[in-house]
Length: 423
Picture 1: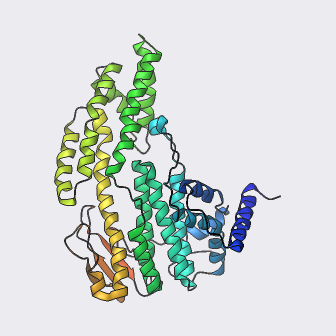
Picture 2: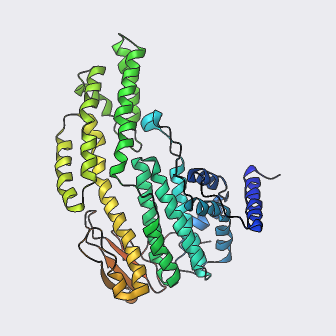
Picture 3: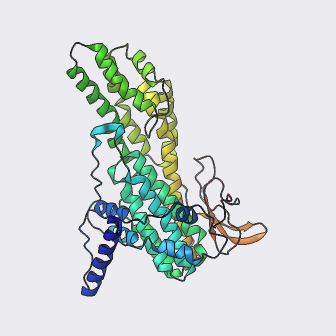
């Protein structure tokens, strides 16, 4: 008996055939989130053995076998929907209800990132089999999903976007020599045209809504529910702070959060409201700092971080320090995205093309150097000016097959870690 997922896949295939036969174009007015949720539903149910084979093996040192292609093709229905969503003209609305505050569930984010990982594998298969345009379409569709993932405005969704962008840029870099000029041109245009890229600064509004505003409403609601019973009010509020201090996207794994908040609040719920009100003005101030250009940002962020560290308000010292690491990730991602466009233009137009793409964190185009690995020329690297993550931003574009190495990040140019070989 067929499973419901098998039935859905069959119906999707029949629908696609019907539309193809009639020569009709797909709808572009559908909320992309609806298409993405459908795409998540039709993801193939791989066995643990097949999943490990596909996702946990090192594939860059060998020709991809037929089994790899068969498993990659099981994602065809999923990527039909992801590609369709990339063409949608309607805004992407995930329908997130933030009424649960920091406990709001965002189950789609991890699965969206898996789609980017799958796009990387499918691109390798397409490129090996002489289908660079198919690889390009999957990469651009996954990039659109990455951008749409952050449309809810949350910081965690923005960080998922950045992680997916970096993964897709690395996919282009490690397969650079397999892309045709036409495919690279389309990639360059697609990277530049893909709409909806949010910023770290734009996440402040939702973070205010889901943390200090939500907490204030929570405290007020508990006070109203237990008038005159301060002990019960504090007991209820304690549950919330213990939950927040136990981990998650906003808080650290810190069981001292509640005692520190209670002490700073003078042991009262009204004192907790005061701490929250005192913390709120820092959010728009932080938003302004996060929106600054690089040079101004670094100066202003140092001052803001010093103010946070000096604060006697545990709400401030618990939830603001993490922001200091977010903007550098964004600068790194912007650099990487520009490097892919620069590398594409370099292949299309040589040095003149390279110089048309400016380093977003520098004062001109990227520096280019040949790259040698284990004594063999393997391609070229682009160097960015940004060093805010503790290392210079570098991306290596592979022009010749050979032993795998890392193409991006602080370990760029070093041998890749050795996962188990494919069985």
